[in-house]
Length: 286
Ligand code: AAT
Image (cartoon, rainbow, N blue to C red):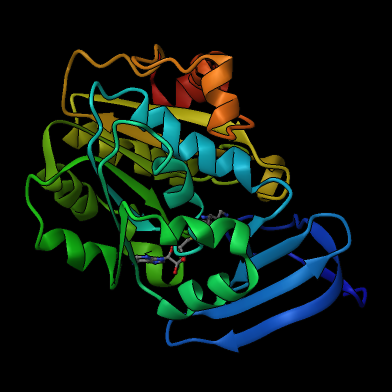
């Protein structure tokens, strides 16, 4: 590897790797669960990597964090109680807390070291964890859900990829627990990988969701520093009337400016569900 560059190599996206020029390694440790690395990049601000996979860079994290938050929140008539599984960097909590209907946010991340390291090095994300609406809990999201029934309007799974501590968050039993933890008409949204390199993962996550929820769909957004520059979300609703592609709550430009939302609006919400033909066919969503 060329010195001074970080390359994101993984068996999940074999034969392809995004590289970032690194100016300084700010933090590196092996926690109980994973390898944590924070670097200062030349062009993308600070970046967090877990087990060699880019979790976020300061330059483009807003696309992912806004979309994984507002696609489900704006598809729900009154999202008051929210659970975030993963998301220890605070980016999703930061966005979810901006939604005026949201009253309580519980965040459960497996790794308290990710939370602490992000508090120290990624303050623009971790400020989300200090919001008074947010309660942070440390533990496995799967185990947490076992003990929570009928409590949440929206559950967002902002988890790392399906290797290591997040592996079981991409399997059928997790979707059974998600369903049970929702209130009536509840909605779920989960990080679900990219169709360009991980079609099988997308298909199986989507199938799990479809098995448990009367409405299930897949949406995409652009994140230049994620593998292939694109990432998708699986969304499910217990309400058979939910039409994810048409937002129930529309923020106007003034609202969006005030909320410091830079990527999401109602137009991009609708577009996120427009999928290429090969994806429609693979997921049978057409
Ligand atoms: N916010 C964008 C970054 C992430 S964070 C993924 C988080 O999931 C990490 O903080 C990790 O500690 C946490 N996590 C992993 N497994 C579990 C688990 N079983 N229970 C709770 N939290 C967990 C997502 C990056 C996506 C990368 C795409 N390539």
